[in-house]
Image (cartoon, rainbow, N blue to C red; front, side):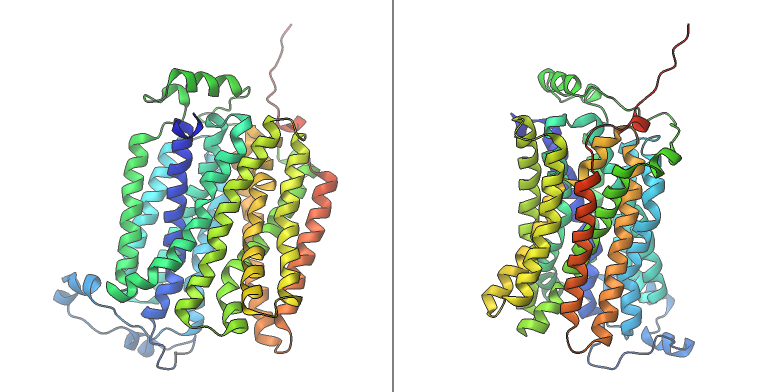
Length: 472
């Protein structure tokens, strides 16, 4: 049975790891409210040395060694809004830097060690963040960047696992199930972080999520095996099913030559990258600015805003799992060709958010209409899990880790640009900023989708095939 198998156990385990990773990443956005003294004016971004020293209470050496303040008190800091913005965004630079090296090295070194140690170190730096905050904002930023480096390694290398563990007819649902943790994580954070801050104090948020990550990394080292042939608990039936279904095994322990020139000339790879740019653009914008839009449109209190902001992430997780399952069903029953399936789910993932964004702009006259269209605009992008997100594995399984890193870099660049452009428009346009922001996202989605529908492929490209020399 599918859901009693080892491969689905790995997918669920990766889901939990992704939930923890996103929790460690996003929780600062909410704890910042408790960490910063919002009742006093924030300092300027070019705060002098003396002013920086005033941000943190001076302590003696004995007081620094006393762990009780970190566990039982809620220190409050006078960080400027500029510093807060740098702290929140700094983790993305770490993720961005690590993508391509992690993708390339995933084809050489042990995935078990890379993922396990990256998750462990990300969790340790999460545990250290309250202590870093006591020493100053610079250490918090450094801590976040380093944590982003390790999270980027985990996010890229985990997808290479399915080269040896996912039968082609189950690739969509296994990938979608594991990656859906990235969508479920923010939902959980938005729901429980406020409660933890109120009852236990904001430092406990980092201690809880950090400790959970450490525990998961230990379990990962114990339970995960890179190849079905080596797993001690897998049944012979499942092992034979996986190995017989996979016609192309890619070694993860040998250095392979990457055909950069052929990749640069590959039109299918370019359109996947273009759609990743559009997907991350819309997903980042809708995820980050949903609470701000809810406050602008509905004027609700913070608790209700947090609850409403968590709903899109919950539905996005449901749609992601559904998309992977539907894509595999269509392929199993030969309902459509593989390239048609990829184009169908990519179209849903880019077209539906655009459609519901238009509805949000022009048809959301009531409270409930606004919430419904906002949830749908946020969550329907998850249908791309059955399309462009796994399309790279279709066209180049031999170089999947490296290409996944490249497409992630292009996508994350789109997300960073979206966040920056949105902030600029909101600060400079007082009349109709949201109209311009949503129309820009829609145009980006539509242009990328048109190119994808024309040029996308789903068969292994010539430059990605393993060549063997023949001697006479």
